[in-house]
Image (cartoon, rainbow, N blue to C red; front, side, top):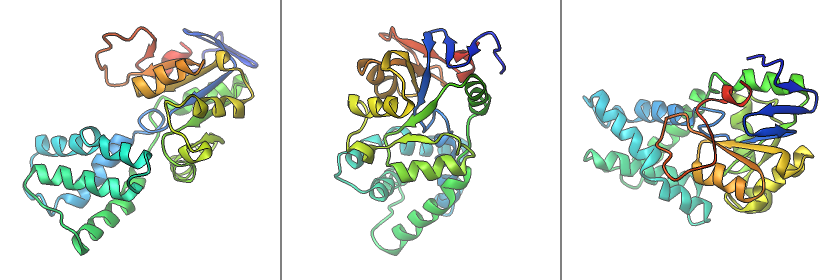
Length: 245
């Protein structure tokens, strides 16, 4: 990804207009969080689900990553700790297959094993580093705004080889989460740009594309999975390559 005609110092020509800065969501936008979670989940749960076939493991992973996000919402609301919501999601996924992960040492062991193994599988998507190279060459500031706490996401970016993303806003930065406009605008402030000249890119249609657009940014939905977009008339790409090509 070179896009020499699309980038010049301080500006980036995109399909959504000329921008001076870009903010990104992190999970399943910059890093493949779903892969890291489902891979670690299988590794720490195989002894509880011997003989489960690939279809079963895919179902197991989907329950944890997509069908139990209400527990994550409770975490964002301050009703659960981060690890409590992880454990509840794990119990729900295991329970679907008739395995009860009860209180006590078994739960503690399962959770600790997952906490230990999951970070090792966090890697950036293939289109991330080439885009950051383009932005660096063009002098375009960039950063990340996440619905998780700053230090946890800082460690995640660094371990994934994305330490050059130095500007980061977490839910504990201002005490609010997406889609509160303040969290996007704090990212804009760190970039030193204007909202109307700042692209915000993320995989969540509501929290990323629509939320940032409502805050005055140029919101773009990164629809990597080809999810149907009925009723959505905002900016959309299926790969980060499409931001500059």
